[in-house]
Image 1 (tube, rainbow, N blue to C red):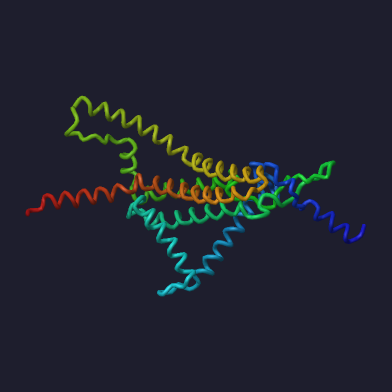
Image 2 (cartoon, one colour; image 1 turned 180 degrees about the vertical axis):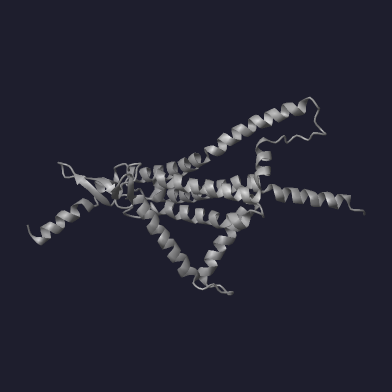
Length: 293
């Protein structure tokens, strides 16, 4: 066998043909390197590392050495940070904001770019496959897959979000406020009839148990929402032969899903950590009303 024939044989599984575009993509990431025992490097993991490295390099390139008079690149990054700050600070509260903001920004940028990278040519359509008797190529193991089109990737993001939420609420709110917020009787005792107050206590206890269940399934709901939209969009593009008009829709979907994931994490934090700001404002208003004129 000649050297040219050997090279063609090796490159044949990596062929990229139009027939691969029309095929649906598998919901499970393909293993690029299998270590055995359930340990492997998948194509979505490889993509996640690659895009994360490019994002870090891009930010370092744009910002460089921070200056008081910012460069154009630094101004772009600072404008994005300021926009997210104005959006997220009222939601999470001033006390939790310094701790929560770095991870919220990371979620938004990471998810946004990984959603959009699925639109790049060759993503999900270049890799290893087989050729049938009719000479049609069938892609079975893509080299690159969007990180968020794999459920393992989105559940990892959701678990990180849940873990960060636990750390922040226990640090800012504390166990006492958390228990009161979940199970406490929020009715004003002075303004509630004596017979009704114990009944309301039981109602709030039942509502608290439902809320605990809702909290427990948050990682699942967060991950499924992101995975379903990204994986569905990937299948839409493949099924329509990468029709150009759907690119604009997927750009919008990628932005919305990054915002939804970030905002939901912010809301979960703010529900427990924003109480302090409200109480402080109420106390300040109360002192102002009681002050002599």
